[in-house]
Image (cartoon, rainbow, N blue to C red; front, side):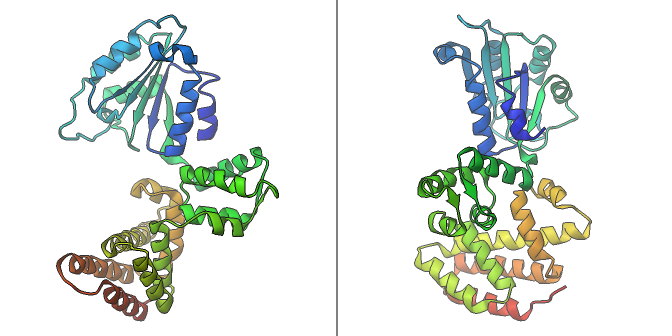
Length: 342
């Protein structure tokens, strides 16, 4: 069963405890939509509550979960930021007693549905409370969503809304949003309005309506550099400066992208699959796919040298009056000349 299908069962075949790990804005919103269906609107004030573990004790949340519903059949309690279930130990955060949750799991009230959100991919499997939770709860892992599943969700959304989307339009939509599902769904709302007469979404429509983020623009800049389109890269960089983008921010994203290319190249040499890279690097699968395609063309030495050069440029941008455009121009020319295809 896909993550989307599992979420849709929340309001249909409700389980007593849900453990949600990872972060994904789209799926979190979908989960909350299902949660709202569990309690009639008129009962939500008395039988629905959220507790943030950053500033509320676990005991307080569980006391509420153990309470009898007030003039209703069901109570919903949400525990957010349950980082005490991971190996992380953030400074300055409240300390919680996990044994209180273990006790709750031993006597789960039939009237309460408990949702525990952990904004991290990994739980600490050594902890007794985590072992018990995995036995007693329905686990929803939001970070494990593949590009294929995202594509299916988008196509289903388009079809259920009475539209068709051409393959090149879908590819461009993915490219401009870097595969961010929440962003894709938001962008589709205005695309639907624009195409309300034809009901067909073409690539030209995506070009017109879906703007590129700075991250996506810089990704194009990286592609120009590594593909040897030096003049285009330099002109593109100038356009970004004309748009009032900060040189140090552009350079930071360039650094991040070359670091990702280097990491993917190294992991590929250790026989990591794209899905394994996604888990290891905690990067969106679509970005891993694009990085994997680019990294295959270059040696580790080339990518490492480019990354270190950008780190040096960052230092110059922070501490000197060097012209940012000139620094980038030298970088683009230098690494076009050094390019060493595998």
